[in-house]
Image (tube, rainbow, N blue to C red; front, side):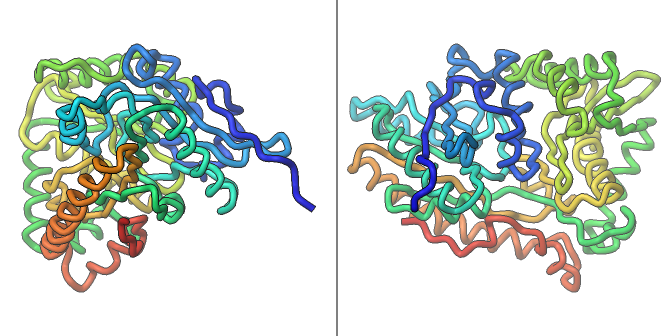
Length: 396
């Protein structure tokens, strides 16, 4: 006897979905919480006007949410960190529009995690089928799912999808009982370099403090946003996120925040805001009012590693790209994205491009792994918590 009928729904706001039922599907992943996604929308950072029209997908059965996908209808490719600008240019040169497109991702957040949120494999498969049907029916040129975790990636082995490989740099906690124990696991030249960096910051008279979210005061939040905005301003850019977004995070998910503040000469001069959950720390937002050599490394990497060791967190994800992170104890981690393209000829061309790119990426990752910052005797410990990069996945 078959169970209750499944029902697929589309949502123009994350607020339309029950927060508790959504969060129950995320596995406690900080960057997928209903509160975070709603903060993007409620603050006005993610709207149709900003080119991020919410288009979330849900599957219900028996009155319960059994699967869901964070989705957006995009009018550009900003804030994604998987770059498809050249694809857009190639298609548009043929007279066909690339935008709008569908995107499943966390806005402005290149963090691997669940994308096909589901209570079981059958629900995940139903969700993927519904998303592909939506892409076909909506008239968009393409649909893209970025940074899936292992469960989502396994479901994405689908004949309609092309898989793309990339790399990030993550730090893994190999059971360190102190920062010094971590340093002792590194090759001698890396230990020396880190100690020199930290000493240079200390000799400049800089002190740093770490503040958990519930203890972040109004003045400190305002300071962080001033630093964050200034870093964009000196590059002639506007920040993606506004002050209201960070206010909402502090109000709704203070337990998921950790702020690093740097002080010199009696004045606060830089900040780094991280997200966290029970297993991982995510380096997210940085800004400075005064530039000092090595301060970025101290605030964004060394302080985060110390915090992860103290709180017994398993992994510290330092953000997208950045081979320089390897000298600070991070190692390469393969990440993935999945792509559906409407036009068959265009899809064939992209598939050939991805085959060449994948061969080059494999060589690049092999080269990176040869440059491990760890002593060879302890190198294997740094890979024990690897995520989707450990899968043997071959793109169609």
